[in-house]
Image: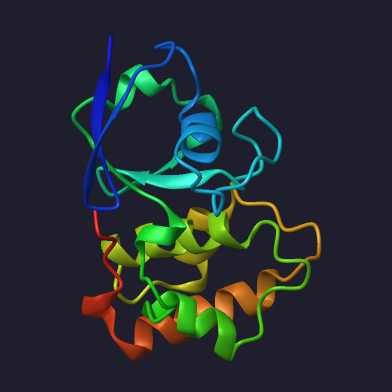
Amino acid sequence: MAITFVLNGNSQSIDVSPDMPLLWVLRDILNMTGTKFGCGMALCGACTVHINGEASRSCITPISTVAGKNITTIEGLSLDGTHPVQQAWVAEDVPQCGYCQSGQIMSAVALLAKKTNPTDADIDDAMSGNICRCGTYQRIRKAIHRAAAASPAKTNSAA
């Protein structure tokens, strides 16, 4: 039975096992490789996407639970890296190895959609489920503040 949902603004219909994780549908079926596999247990945040605008861990989300919902991946934020959070990430030179960054960015975008001027405590709370093995947490916080100051109205996800 096909599962239909909207991915980055486009309708998708996928015929896979209903318990297949959304992460593998995105990466292996739809070739959306910006979303990363990290731990497979929703502990690291590398697989973060938006489901109806909420930051969600795609590694533990069965595809059957997203039927009829809007999914946004890192590729859906902008075609050319011009989303305010992506620009802030570049301006603050956040990535080191870069592996966790799509999940970090997706969590940051979800935070800014709810709180246009977050405090350090808001940022720490919202980002606490995203692990950066390189330890760029201070630059991440700085980039989120930069994105909030640049254009709060533009930080909403496409979903």
